[in-house]
Structure formats: structure tokens, C-alpha cells
Image (cartoon, rainbow, N blue to C red):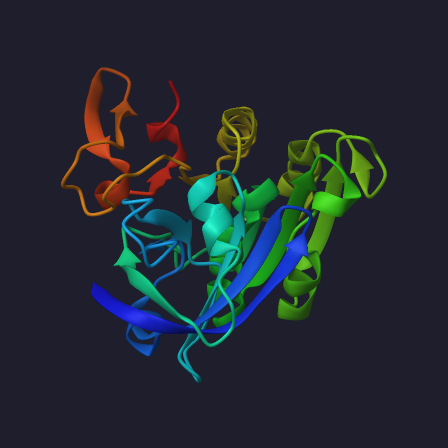
Amino acid sequence: MHQMMAAVRGHRPERPGYYRLTLEAPQITGEAQAGQFVMIRCAPTLEPLLRRPFSIFATRPENGELEILYRVVGRGTQLLSEVREGSPVDIVGPLGHGYTLLPEARTIAVVGRGVGVASVFSVAQAARREGRRVFAFVSARTRDLLLAVEDLKRLGCQVEISTDDGDAGYQGLVTDLLASKAKSEGIGQVFVCGSRRLIRAAAEIAREAGIRAQVSLEQQMACGVAACMGCARLVGTPGNKVYKKVCKDGPVFWIEEVLD
């Protein structure tokens, strides 16, 4: 884990209310694993006091850059959206436990809805670097809110999309698309980030198909380093539930652990 002042190399709107932030942080980029996150101080002032957690969207170790894809949801992220290129940003990371790519899973599926795509993109990137086949299922309410579709295509993923209004791709649940491929394409592992409904549906598909699956939990965090206990969540197997800290023990868990 490193705390450093990272220079902003790029910062631009991605979609309405969403931004893409590129930081020069070679120490963090050199150690980051897919699914980990960073804590960022969104302004140089004491208000807001707490850092905000962000999934590491992508890394480019060759030039020491990492990318964050985030949504403006409050004062902290609003202030962050106003940071200009060349400015320094106070960042801590990499943090948490990331995804585990099973060696035997040569074909994987990543499933993300909304800004959840920011987390699963990182494991798609890692899998493609190892030459694995990747199916990417991306979901949003409308066409304008679909994220990272072109990025996934450039990685070489086979991308399928769904929107609630049917304006782009399949109209309906993105897990319907996953269910179809799970039966026909020999998917060996599934990675999910999104709503609780999405997680439950993906878990059921994975269970029926006998596929191991992992999920990244989106959880509010105050410290990000397991000091405050603010992100504790009841997880585990039936009959053996325990509280675990999402920041330290996660944010990635095996999907059967988080079903409640």
C-alpha cells in the first residue's frame, strides 16, 4: 500500500454524470491486482474530510498509469470532477483483495451494470493479458449510460449489451444474456459487479451451470484500511455467518458467500 500525490494525466466526462480519471501512480500501478481499489482525497481542503473509494478500472504498467471510472454521487465526487489535468491528487492504494482467476477457466464472463463495469473491466483486462477468452455483458438503464463498451471491444472481448428501455442491445435483464452463453460457450468462471438483484440472478445461473463466480461488493467506506469497521458485512456460508470488512477481506468475495 502506498500513499502518494499522483499527477492527473487525463480527466474527462465519459457519460452524463460519469467521469474517467487517469493518474500517474507507478508504485500503485505496479502492484495493483484486478478488483482492488484506491482511496482518493477529492479536494485539498479538510472538507470533505474522508477519502472516497474507487475501483481501479484499468492499469497501464508500462507508463505507470491507472484509470478510475466514477459516477458523481455527492459532494466528494463533485469536487473530484472539477480537478484539472496536471493537478496532484492524494491517493492511497492498492487496497483490498481482488479477483482470483482460476487457472482452468480459459473462458470467462464478466457482468457489470452501471458503474459496476469499472470493477469487472479490470479482470477482463487481466484475463486478456493471459490470452483468455472473455465474454462481457454490460447493462444500463439507457444507451447513454452504457460504460466501457468500446474499451472492452478493444481488449478483444465479445461484448453483449442490454438496456432497460431497449434503445440499445437486448431489452431485459443482462443475466438473460449470461444464461444463454453459460450453456453454450463453456464459460469457466463468472465475475459480477452491480445491484443485489443482478448478483442474485448471476449466482443462480452460475449455480445451475456449475460455474464458480465472484462478486465485487459496492459498499460505503470511511477509512478503506479496516480501522473504522464501517463497511462490515455479514457473509459466509449458511450456518457459518461472520462479519467481514469489505475493505480488507473484500471487496471481492465468492458469490455464494454474500447471498442473504
